[in-house]
Figure 1 (cartoon, rainbow, N blue to C red):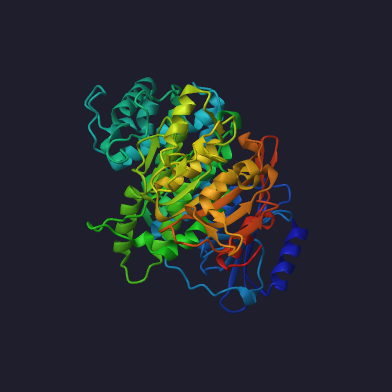
Figure 2: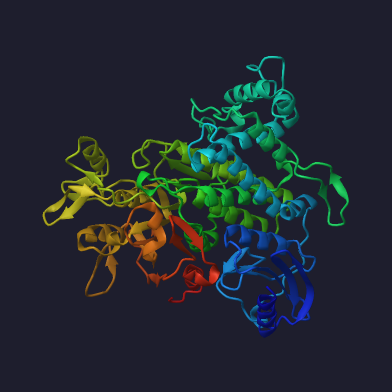
Length: 616
């Protein structure tokens, strides 16, 4: 450890951070705060070389950096081999440690006492959540795998959040004239374990469809038949004791503001981050069953790139005639909501930095966006549950995350209503075949824009259930679901709307899929070099390495395609930003994604290259 600390100090000195402000060693972790002798600071966390390297380290480093009395521009976590580099003010990862001359001075941040407390307990709360999940999983109390343990934990978190928001709610189905506060109480569980568990499970059935948690006024978080499976009182007591006793809330001068903090006191940013890290760390990917989380590094890169343009478009602040936000962001194959959560965080950052708005105006507008602007869908009830809880803990309890049979054909979505769609849809696995009766119906639905073997190119219609053969357009024999998702997403976008979608490389390169590319971009005029026709402007294509989606079971090399739906047919295709990522910040070992750190993530430089209009 001492040798590593010597190396870290030398690196800081080489980068221009020569003045030590703080250096503390506790167990296997050292904390350092250095400056350049003026007003530029860097916060470091140094871990022993055999310390597990994971996302919790990054989040702990960021939150601790934000708590420093001298607000640092940069944060750096290292174990000598792996590194996280963070722009603290923007909360963004960077690929290397810059020289002090390249670092901007950051003004000291005023922080609400409850926000400060939330960040201060982040690491402790993360450990508690991880421990509670392990308690459920290892008990095998009516749970068979780690994903089911997450689901049961979600139900108990929901009950605690409901209690905090409705403390005097009178329970009608629980015997004995009890309120939710009486029942969801660790002391009651300790005193009357069997009766308490019966009451909590009954209360769940009563409150799970409460109007405050209905998306669009009609879609609950839980399926109608859902119930709490856990029956061991010791698990209930441990979970609610932990959630209801988070320790005293103190200001920065250690004055006690509240004797016992609760989940309601934890900021949505921190609480959501804790759940998201838990979900990614404990979720078991089952690629063959279509149950899979898009890697964090991929969602962050796609959201970062698309938001660069969305923020400039003015759409985040667009309001309807009633003064409500018009912004609509969606993911028709949302899984646990990773894209939507990241997009929500980016919207929040953008609104909170606005000038000319009071803090109250910002928070009111942001709350309206949280309630109305995010839409997702999935066909797996467990994923819908995780996405709803994930969004709720990030402050969006009414996010419209819907369970649908098929996102391609559901009537829950309306054409030309979305400003941004971010998605990693299912692909491969045989596709839709016209030989199958049900599949053929879907291919026909995706051919509504074909008239007399000609594609009309209407912006609200579908065509890619058919293919442009030498004698005109007709129903294709077999179509990859990803092709249909491209068409569906374009249909759902408003003119000028943006689409970030993960696709198998074959769609972008195979001669058999040329009709798809021409449908998007039009045909190239060899004389003028211009593309003529097409529904979209291709803004960027980023190629991922082979193992990026290894855990999904897809087996195909993939890329990220970034499109803009044309605002009018005369809009011309411009230069396309092309890039290849050789590394994306993790490797797959023993069926797990192992974090390698920011200096092994080419996507960070690629996104910056796009923003600065540079080729990578």
